[in-house]
Amino acid sequence: MTTRVNLATFVNTTLSNVRQSTSNMNKLQEQISTGKKVNRPSDAPASARRILSLRAEEMRLDKYSSNIQTAKESLDYNASILQNTSNILQRITELTMQGVSDSTDQSGKNIIASEINQLLESAIQGSNTSRAGRYVFAGTKTTTVPFETTRNSNGEISAVTYNGNREKIEYQIGPSANIVTNQTGDEIYTDSRLFDTIIKIRDNLANGTVSFARNELDNLDNASVGIVNAVAKAGSISSTLELTGNRIADTRLSLKEVLASAESADLTELVMKLKEQENIFQASLASGSYVFNTSILDYL
Image (cartoon, rainbow, N blue to C red; front, side):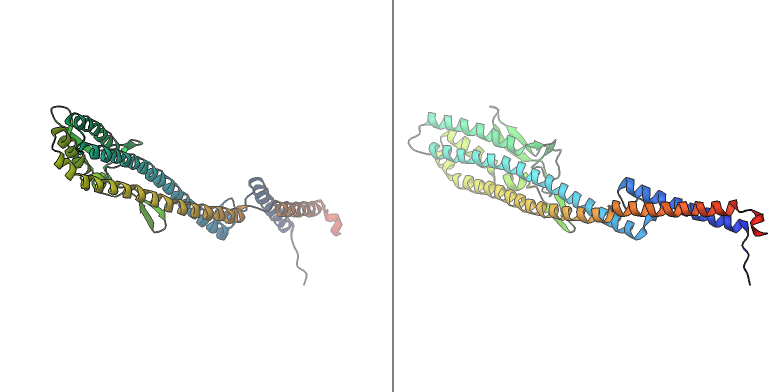
């Protein structure tokens, strides 16, 4: 039995073929112009999901890398302040040894006490250091001046009060890895009685009570050790962060290569496919043209 196909069927089929070829060419031209295999999820749902997953991982790594950089800069800055405090304490120790010596008269002791007082002021300034508008030794109360001074009638510091807290500042540097970047002023300065010790040494030398000043040397040494340990701790964490940052940088580089492979189109292959679609398009037009030009006389 012969199947008869009417003209409407020919027209619909031809138009469908032309539309499909046009759509395919548009898609290929877009891929060539953007250089990407997938320009929207509907192009290739499975590939789009993988690309989105890779991009999400890239964003996480970028965040970890940024946190590491911020944390390392903070640690290095804090370590520099503490190193300066360590130098101050070393000088105070030298002065105290001179001051408690029997060869130093009271006039000399007064001069030493005056220099120690200036060093105390410098140490206080260091403990109240801010970075980018935030106090580095105030715990999480970064907008609060950590140390408040009380002064005597001569304008000299007679007591120091801590106004910060002991809370830690943490940064996420991995999927389940956080690192603490701050050491609070309470831990570094108050627990070691650093300021109280310096004040007592200054006052005892000025008053001529050498034995009391000498008794503070052990406390001064303990405070100095505490500062040195704080510097070492900051340096150790900073070194660990640097290694972690290098590892993340390597991972990011590998991820970018995988992402580029998943996203980037093969231009040579696309050009060949476009040429193929153009041929199909021209064939569809030629076929339609032949049908439309056929006369009824051709069937008589």
